[in-house]
Structure formats: C-alpha cells, structure tokens
Length: 296
Image (cartoon, rainbow, N blue to C red):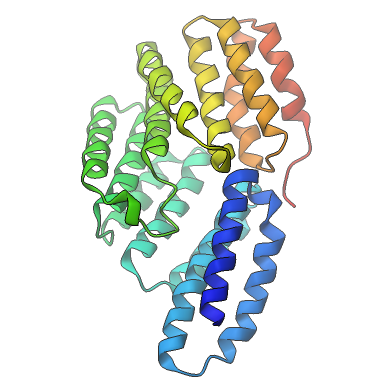
C-alpha cells in the first residue's frame, strides 16, 4: 500500500513540475520524502523494501530535478546522489545520471555534461533511454562548436527513438516523446547556429515550431523553453518582429511557471536583442530577468 501510494504521489507531483515548474512543488516533494523515511523504516519484508527503494529512488530523482529547476544546484546534486544510492533499475540509474548531466549543461559545462551522459550510456539498456542520451550528447557537442559529432549524435538519437517503444516508457522517462525530441533537436540546431553557422537557425525554427505545436498544456514549461529558443532563432535570422511576437507568447505563459531556468534561458535572447537593437523584444524580457527567483 505504501509503495502504491508513493508512486501515485510521485506521479502527481511530477505532473505539477512539468506544468508549473519545480518551484511550485518542491516543498511538497520534500514533505513526501520525510514521510518516506518513516514508512521505509517500518517496511518489514525484503520484497516490500526492494519495491520501496525503487520508488524512493524515483522520488529523490524528482526532488533533484525540482531543486535544479528552482535554481538550487547543491540540493539537486545531493538528491541525485541519494537517488543513485536507492536505484536498482539500470535505466533509472542512467536517467538520474542524465539529469545530473543536464545540470552541468545548464550551467555552462557541456564537457562535464557530455562525460555524465556517456557514463549514463554505460548502463542504459533500451532504445528510449539511448535516444535521450544521444540527443543530449548532441546538445553538448553543439555547445562546444563540434558540428560533425553533434549531427552524428542527433542522427543516432532519431534512429534510437524510431526503434523505441515510447508508449511503454517508465514514468520518469515518459516526458521524452516525439514533441520533446523535436524540442531538443531545435535546441541542438540553436546551439549550432550560435557556435558554428547561423544557417542552422532555419532548421532550428522548423523543429521548434513542431515542438511548440505539439506540447500540451501539461508540458507548459517545455513549451515555454521552446518558445524562447524559437524567438532567438527568428532574431538571428533578422526578423525582430516575429521574434517579439513569439517571445510575447513565452512571456504570457511563463507567468504561471515557477522555474528559475526560465530566466537563464532568456539571457541569450536578451543579449541578442541588445546587439540587434530590438527594443520591443528587450522591453518584453527585461521585467522577467528582474523578477525574484522561484526557489520556493
């Protein structure tokens, strides 16, 4: 009963994180972890304890992700390490290491992130997991300005995804569907447009457009991130009016999302708008960059 309750609560909180950001549910995740400590201590049979450990690993992974999204890197790292201590499923271990890599990538450490994604790949056992890892390796290579390995990894991600049984993905990995693949493909092209050749802005716009159109309201945070990247690519192509129109959509949606990552993703767009004297766009973004952090 305890394990079923924990998995159901974790799924509910994961859905809140996707829709409203880590800052909206981090406190509730912490409270659930406190309950776990007591319930796990009173779990008698070895079979129940094994199931409980797996469920607790998932919850710590979620706790790490919500902390990361709220801008609390130290807390995120601590929870990810605890998740690894509890995890027994190899693909969950790979997913936790993927999340640790994303923290590095977000904070400007693509080389460190690449190492973590490769480490995750040593234990990943299915096509879906391999698609996630290959896509994120492509992102790292793109950030490093490595065109050939970036495109090779991206191609591998699409090949692995085509062979994956997406409908039966585990709860912690179910976010990575065809729309999220389009979103990260757009992110890879966005990075390449900035580090290699501005001509990559065009395929970035195409992929991000598919992602934005496909993301449902329950993935509002991902849609907001895609809109920000889409605006940046329109700006890189010299269409400041379209960039401002897309950014306005992102700004409108971001008001409901408690994610410190939103600010970080807006910074390159704000800087590019300044370089190109896109006044309307800068005026849209500046209030969000000045807003308080969502580390609730």
